[in-house]
Image 1: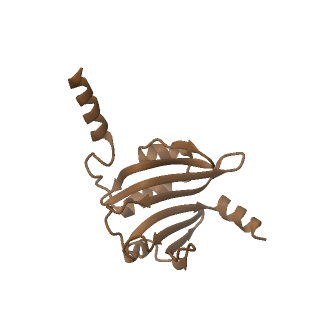
Image 2: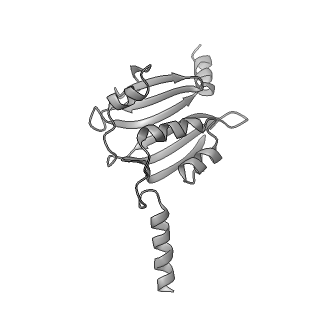
Length: 168
């Protein structure tokens, strides 16, 4: 019985992204895979990231340590959904402090048409790339070294449209 418990525990740990072998893909490859998953339904996000999201108010989330690319350690994932059809508004990946330092220059190289903007009241700057489906928002903020990526958001056109309508 004890051996079975140890075996099951080891299997769980080895199967977990944070404990298994580090993925061979780069940040850039991970972002491209994430973008190709559009539209981001709960099922597609869970399958792509290999996680199970728990249901909460207005969306779904997961917390832990998830390694999705070389040095990319995510501590929380939130999928916000609204509307009667359950359309995705925002997909947020918050990086763990143990994550590698992905610099502004690296993100800018991947998305050269982006622009810099203060993205929240905490004074965090974001690098924003507009796309046909919405926006990428890459946060570089005060919580960690200024030049390091702290959060990645996908903000959909559905959310942008609703936000604009509310602000009129």
